[in-house]
Amino acid sequence: MTISVAGYEHCVCCGRRRPHCLCDGELAFEENGKKIRLTLRSDEEGVALVLDGCVFRDDEPKCDGLFLWKKGTSKKYAILVELKGVDIEQAFKQIAYVRSNRLEYRQIVETFMSDVGTSTVVEKAVIVSNGALTKPQWVKFENQFGFRVLPVLDSDATTRVTDARELCR
Image (cartoon, rainbow, N blue to C red; front, top):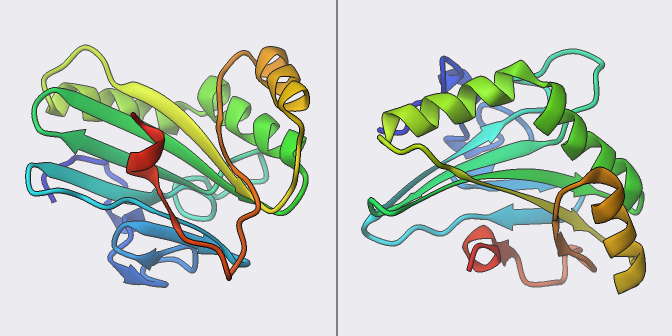
């Protein structure tokens, strides 16, 4: 792994349930039937970093994981992941809190930015849920919290696993 995770190497997924129960392989998160993965191509690098219960070990709001993804030399992404049942508003709150109040998250993103020699990392967020919202409800939450979130709704054990790369086009 050449992507630095700012001293949180012990929180990088390396196999199913290793080092944490959220890991579903090296580049996938799974919780209660909600799952997302990152598939790499030959010129790409990535890590799945467990936030909830590893990087963040307190009772403050947090989301579940983070993909750091480097596409060649041109694109770098930090994708916050929340695997949620039906309370999508709570998922927005958790992501907003991490983005605004978690120094560890900022440190990880800044380390990633400096390691890859760029001044920008595209920050994204995704909610994987079996909840349902109308488009106006979704837009209301995005406006309320001040950022866009990529929705993956109707996620359960019988649906195709979403690939985070599809969300970053």
